[in-house]
Length: 328
Image (cartoon, rainbow, N blue to C red; front, side):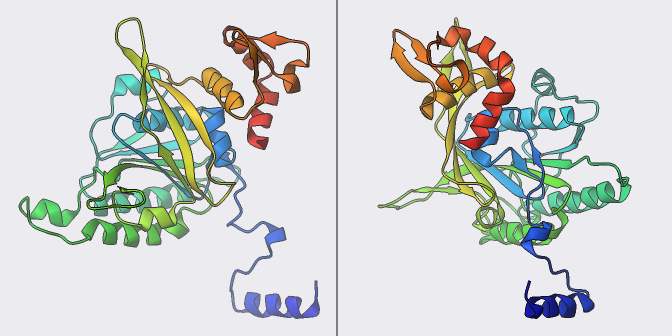
């Protein structure tokens, strides 16, 4: 390191400015990840939800957003983390959360009325969590907001329906996220759900937008779009949806990767089936004939498998499959 660089570092640190070299791993470097409970979904984001960053998952109705959020809550609790579930839709089912594996007795659940109240809850919860942590406690506060689009502004509640409030949601989101950026660094992880809207009069390009203006798009480190879901048929009624998750923005890993997510109403994402589809899409599971596949990297050149035998391969070689998925 040159003398000039050392002199600048000493001068700035003498004035209490927090300057770091990237080799010293400053707070902007993601060191920890929270699993979503689905390996392919973790893989397309990097290694899961990045701690200290905002993650936005958005999509149309019945695309599986809340089921994914419930599975994230269950996975985070399983890793010993604290989960704060902010439900502004008022549509969370305790029965479904328990089926997904969520411990509803320890889940911090709250139903605020306004965007202003949501950000006040975030600030107080984060400050209390950090203040109450011990030095050897490595737990993370995982915040889930379900959903941005269902949260009203205080001005809307105080006035009659139909009165215009130009861009009030966009302003509140921008101010709130700007304030939260510093608080979320370190041992806080945020998953925000949002809904798609259609722009009127668009002739060229995408006519799709998300609620709340551009703030969430700019402040999110990872944005995932859930495509149009297809129903998974059961004996009589649909038992789930097949949704394509595409990373449209990623500041912690390569973007624009995708994965098919088989989401079942009673168990959430089936990781075994999701891994099968993931390795097929990336060409590692190679089709030979009549439903038979080869997977040379794991099973060798001579052995073939069908999807019915994939669960056994998944259980026996999970660690290797997970690392392969993360390396793709």
